[in-house]
Image (cartoon, rainbow, N blue to C red; front, side, top):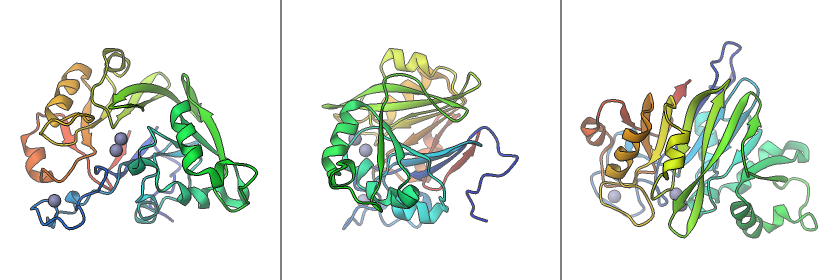
Length: 268
Ligand SMILES: [Zn+2]
Ligand SMILES: [Zn+2]
Ligand SMILES: [Zn+2]
């Protein structure tokens, strides 16, 4: 029995952080800084991705370059859909490893903004173009998100987030009206209407690259301001670079704010 097998008595949602690192991952190739050589497994961060299981359906948010090794590491056996935040390479380069989840050419729903899905179709034309695609490749079923949609029992609300020249899509997951999880990665700000939409969510996951400001990502200080506005049960920082040791950073954070790490699992 795989570790991610859905149990009969499963809670509303099980969330596994497949990756929590910034675009180059941590350790960064060739870097000898204290974080990159740390022996703490929580300082080894692969590219950002989330795996969500509900009793009815399982899905991933983003498929970065580490997607295959993440699936093997966490025993991911079932993916019924992929949701994309945006088409930056660190979030999409593992696209081709969705192949095992299109077994016998099953079309796989891919959710994202029109812009994101358009970029994916350009990058992976061999799969998206029905003239070239052959059975065995990923079989995309593009689903442009324009408003709320359902994944089994879970209602999903897409939330646009400014991310430099790009708009990334955050996702709020609700079950029976209860906001369970908001996943807001790759953003420079969280606009007021998005913060309002996720107020009181049980778990808030936020981009928090590093302490030093960055032109397209929330810094840790900026993320903590969002935490204040949202008032989630627990807030989790993700998309971290190699500036801070997990243990040291977590010790500095206010109560209710944690640092996510690869393999972290939440039962919600
Ligand atoms: Zn990213
Ligand atoms: Zn480093
Ligand atoms: Zn990005």
